[in-house]
Image (tube, rainbow, N blue to C red; front, side, top):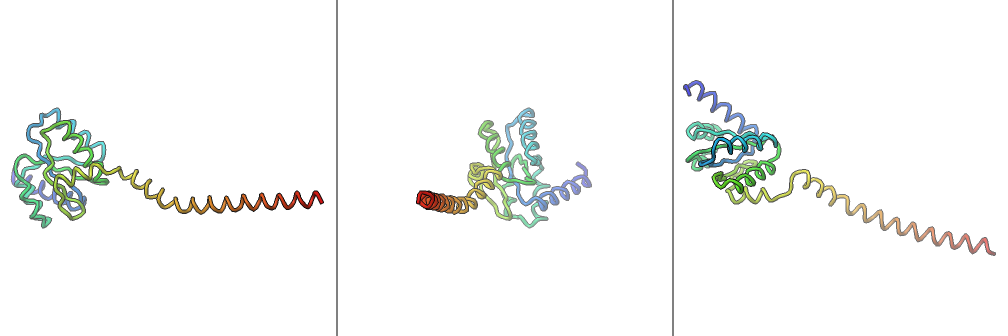
Length: 173
């Protein structure tokens, strides 16, 4: 790369990391081209950018973002998974792929301004998807309302039975 290309790359990487506050650093040492292509396709399907980066250029981008704490993880072959929407789906895809291919290792994650270690990234992968979490949340909100409706329905049912009994009694007499 020529110096100008490197500057452009660092600038683009800095902008991408700044606008998408969730990313994961991985070590891809030992993956062949076919496996890397498969991983990139999987990540692309969920809306995640997966890019191999030179550590020196990534260090410059981290310095631009005041993320010097992450520089220590920029050793060896490094690829960055930058999530645009849902970090859970990206972690699931990476963890699933790393379980199938031992050569992919998660170094560290960065989630909403916090550094999370590889074990925490794997724990995130165990969480349900965003849609499932939203459904569970809505179900939790709906449960008390449903209970109140059932109680009121039971009371109204009993009232109807009593009123029907009174009507029958009056019609007999």
